[in-house]
Structure formats: C-alpha cells, structure tokens
Image (cartoon, rainbow, N blue to C red; front, side, top):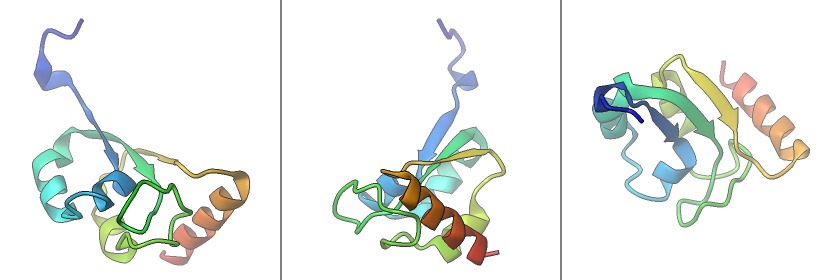
Length: 93
C-alpha cells in the first residue's frame, strides 16, 4: 500500500479530457509533473469514442508539443485505427 501520496503518478488520457473541460493547458499546469503515462485517442468531444488520433476534435497540433516525455499508448479500437493514428502523429512532426 502506498503510504506517501506524493509518489502517486497520473495517467493523462487526452481523449477523456476532450469530453470534459477540454482545458489542456490547465490540466498540464496542475498535473504536468505527476504525469507518468499518456493515453492517445480522439473523439467528437461529446463521448469517449476512441477514434483514431486526428479523426476528432482534440487539438493535437497545440496539445502534442506540450505533453511531457513519458510513455504513451494508443487507445483505439483496431489495428487499422492504430496505423491511421501513427500516420497522423508522424505528419505533425
């Protein structure tokens, strides 16, 4: 059991934030130093659709450069969506 809550990290789920406040800057301001892992997926902003990255309303061009250098995982529904996500992410660099 974790006795020191200062040691607890945060998984930042970009798609989930897009369905709530959409305030990426504020989330990163509050939790940036605690983020240990990031989930990448997209959605329309209304519900958690797990769309390929780039197929929804997440402001990837603005958000991606601000993300800390931690492990990242695609949270999409199939291999085709994963490939599309990777191609989109490559196109931003």
